Each structure stands twice: as C-alpha cells, then as structure tokens.
Image: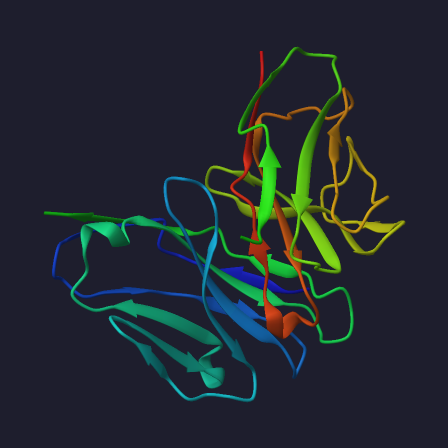
Length: 116
Length: 113
C-alpha cells in the first residue's frame, strides 16, 4: 500500500525566515509521481510541483525549492524568505502506478503560519 | 475561464436526510474525483470516474453515491447511511495521465445539524 507521511502538523515562522516542509513516502512501484499542493484559507488546492520517480534533480522556482531523494524516499519543500501570503496548509501527494486510475494518496498536511 | 465549480460552498443538513453536492467542470477533463477532508486527516478518496457512465469506489465510499451521466458533471450524494458526514468535500478533475496532476474545485463544507 502507498503511504505519505508529513510528520510536521504545524509550523510557525516569522516573515523572512526559511522553512522546510518534510514529506516521506512509501511505495513498491518503480514509476510514480510526487506532488505538492497548497491550500490557502479559501479551501481550493493549488498545484505547486510535480516530480516523476526518474528525475531526482532538485528544482527551484522563485522562493520555492524541492529536494527529491529516492534513497531516503523523501520529497521536501523549502520556502526561502517566507512571506505572510505563504500561510496555508501544504500537502504532499503520491500517485498510483501509471496506467491505472491515477489516484493520489495525500499526506495529512502541514499547516504553515507566517507572522510579521 | 475554465475550471471546476462546486456548489454550494456551505451546506447544512438535518440528520437522516440525503444531500447532493454539485461538481461541474468545463476543462474537458476525462477523470473526476471526490475527496473528503477532515482536520488532521488529509484528503481521502470517496469515488472517482475515468469516463462517462463509469465510476469506482475509493477508500471511504460507504454512505456515498455518485453518477457520471455527462463528462462535465460528477455529483456526490451523501446519504443518511453516512455516519459522520460533517466534513469539507473537494472535487477534482484530470485531463489525461497522472503526469497532468489534478485541478481542484473550491470545496463544499457540509455540516449536519
């Protein structure tokens, strides 16, 4: 069975601090995709990034960066110089094998609170 | 603009009543999904549909029903058999393979009173 663990339930930081959100996953598949979504107070989940299991390159997009390490089954997300607008719940998710229903298994989420 | 519309945003239901949550998309996506979100439990899959007139149970389908008569629409009915229906419900759709990821609606918050 697939599983996604986000051990950090809630994180509070002061604006301009860097923060890393952890994600550890379990799967028996060799081909899979990992995702990060942001859920602001409005409720809608916003797609942030997708990474396939064969691409271990780290990625940077503005203040966001992702560190994917298959050796430790982790896909961590770092926000540099956090801002109040980053306050949200962040979900890590894992796909089922390619070619099936492509369901996503979500972690329980990490609530990030950025204060002035 | 294309997207997913969920209605209503807030819904109150009396115990013992069925209620239907609406989900409409104009993205021409093939697959649609319903997730339930409870505090501290993340998102759990209720039902999903890959094509019209076909749908499958997810991890927590008991007490729920769906239909997929049109590509654009995937309504979810919360029946009186659902023991604890108070939750936030999210609808999502996906164009093709899993590499496309999901597009989500803004959710419906259901409260049983």
